[in-house]
Length: 340
Image (cartoon, rainbow, N blue to C red):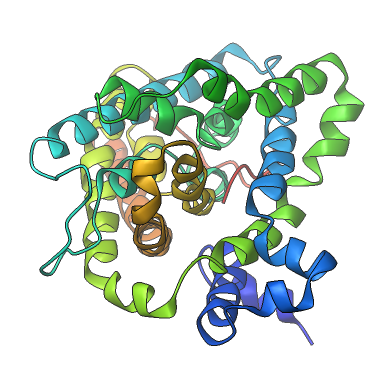
């Protein structure tokens, strides 16, 4: 059976399929973990330790020895995405109560969901799209995007927007595994390769554990808010990213549009932040489901829109008699696929 191939055909499937299976377990057998106990319960309820290992491994994959062009492009996209996510959170905070929207078509939508869906780019999707439509340097520009992984950036944005206050010890505890992995990966290339190989295999495990905190009824209710948020991510972050790529990154906007997605790994952030800030905990199930839906929407639409933009840019370059700022980089080497 080619189960892996079937899962890969689903956008974000490596995360979303196990999460859906976990949600089925939680919905139809909510006490399965406690009943079976031992390692099975650890697999079902072990979101935090599994994510801690994954976060450590993600830090190890960042290579600061990348070329200046790669760092310039990566830094431009990273900074733009973070600033836009902060502004979106700041504006949304004027209209959405701290406890989220509880009634109506957008019930379940919260600042927690908005922040965690806006601030984290799907690095694997970006790299795959830019290998086809960009240059080798642009394809490798996800090198700094791993900094977005985990709760670090979401915590900074929520704190800067005045939505939440994090104790220093909790902030240090959230980023320490990432920093240790980052340090070891840059001290020793062999360690970077070793830990980097663990990034993708861990995704189904924390996806399943996350699913065990979601009721399928919540997923059903989050359909419209999740779709709307996914579209908002593409528009709200995509336009500034295109402009930043053209006027700062030296590209033609293709890389910016390719970065306007929600990472599958962002689905984990509401649960992590909910563990640190008690007032967010009631919002976690709905926020997790909404971010997962936004991830799926952007994973489907971003490659399509990027392809259309790249073709348009190519036609414009030919019409003007110039050369494109970027060229296809089929087969260009990349070290890892980033977060999904």
